[in-house]
Amino acid sequence: QVRLVESGGGSVQAGGSLRLSCAASGYMGAYYTMAWFRQTPGREREGVAAIDRYSTTNYADSVKGRFTISKDNAENTLYLQMNSLKPADTAIYYCAADGSGVVAHLVAAFYNSWGQGTQVTVSS
Image 1 (cartoon, rainbow, N blue to C red):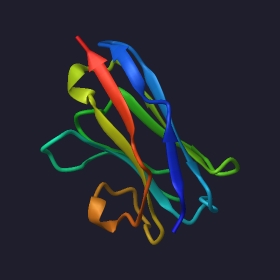
Image 2 (image 1 turned 90 degrees about the horizontal axis):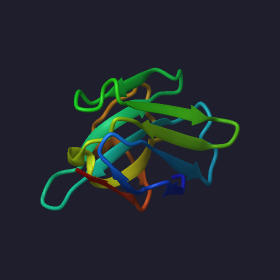
Image 3 (image 1 turned 60 degrees about the horizontal axis):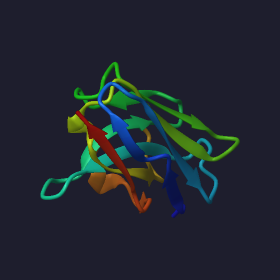
Image 4 (image 1 turned 90 degrees about the vertical axis):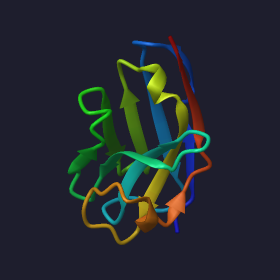
């Protein structure tokens, strides 16, 4: 497993932007599918965006056109650029890694490494 540490969360007004980062302690490189999930109290963890070893991406319908996932293999860092934020985007955001993943999927059960989460709050 790889150790993941998120940063970049915070509070922003609707329409604003934030960029989340996820630093991986181990080699992230070309051997992992990486993703961002989010969760609010009382709800299941929701897949937001994923990127595979070939940099193919996959997004939840709710964030398409607003969020962009990317990674820097040399720096072992995953990013999530979030634009045009809405109050509905308020959640704890988690970074995740799937060591055996071959596609950019959003199925939480297949991710075996998780970060501790970072809070994103969007006010109206």
